[in-house]
Amino acid sequence: MFEKVKKNFGFGCMRLPMKNDEVDYEEFCKMVDTFMDNGFNYFDTAHGYINTKSEIAVRECLVKRYPRESFVLTNKLTGTYFQNKSDIREFFNSQLKACGVEYFDFYLMHAQNKEIYEKFKKCQAYEQALMLKDEGLIKHFGISFHDTADVLDNILNEYPQIEVVQIQLNYIDYDDIVVQSRKCLEVCNKHNKKVIVMEPVKGGNLVNLPLDAKKYLDELDGGSYASYAIRFAASLKGVFMVLSGMSNIIQMNDNVSFMKDFKPLDEREIKAIHNVCDVFKKMNLIPCTACRYCIDGCPQKIIIPDLFACLNTYNLNHDWNANYYYQNCLKTSNKASMCIKCGKCEKSCPQHLPIRELLEQVAKEFEK
Image 1 (cartoon, rainbow, N blue to C red):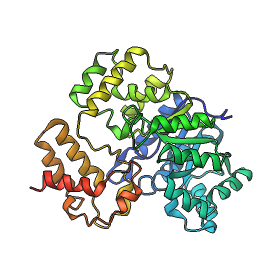
Image 2 (cartoon, rainbow, N blue to C red):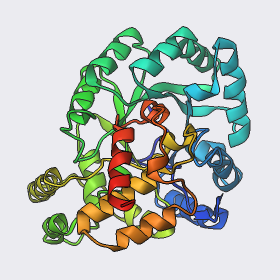
Image 3 (cartoon, helix red, strand yellow):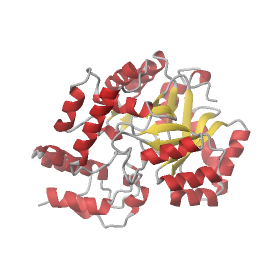
């Protein structure tokens, strides 16, 4: 079905190497070359990634440097960039131009949940995408999804033309009652849909582990913390692609080293993962993946994920340095206490976090 896809590991282009506020093209080119040289060829972007800079970076560092048939490129239709049916084709054409390509291998209806799906239906977005597929401008049609399994089941029943579903899945969220990774995966398997995994290391949280969790993985055979998280996702039934948002060549070299000749987790590694999960369950951490969707609409310009990271650092280590991190954040952000509780951030949060309430906790800890 997807013959052009070479391996089960993809380059997610939401977190690229940065120099000041711009994508570091020199570093990104090195990463693209390493990725391609090791036999991988799947790249994932979206218009809003890195403040609309991701698509351009993909064009400059991948598309202009490699034959089109040598790589697989996924893009997405995001609800914030169209208001009616007639907007969709114009936006799609602008994405083709931004990426410098004549077609997308995969095109996903982005960040689908119950509310966003209703807007897509009203604007006939799915029908528009399927027309683009009929014209050869899209090779494969799918969705990226952030909601409960019953909502996913409904979408797949209404649009059996969907070929792939991109879901958040990692060993911490697997049985989470909000994210419902396991249940969503089971729905995809029931409908025989191939699964693309996003956030396998949960925005870096499964690399920066608490000390009590690290010891279980340190007792294994020397793999990086990221390796166990990514291999966990890739080991599951129905998963055909796992994305990693690598932001430097060191992360790239590590990731390709264990995915080049992929091996599923063995029983000993699975037991260690379960022990790590038990550690996380006992901790009071904010499950933010730093996707930064919440920042775009914030009228107070609060860099919410960074402030949450400060509180997590404090709760992990009870380290007074977290106060310094918080003060550093305030150089580019308003204080947590300046939240006006408009709720825009919560509507855009894929994790369904009670952001307004959590910002109160941040203020309580750091603005004494």
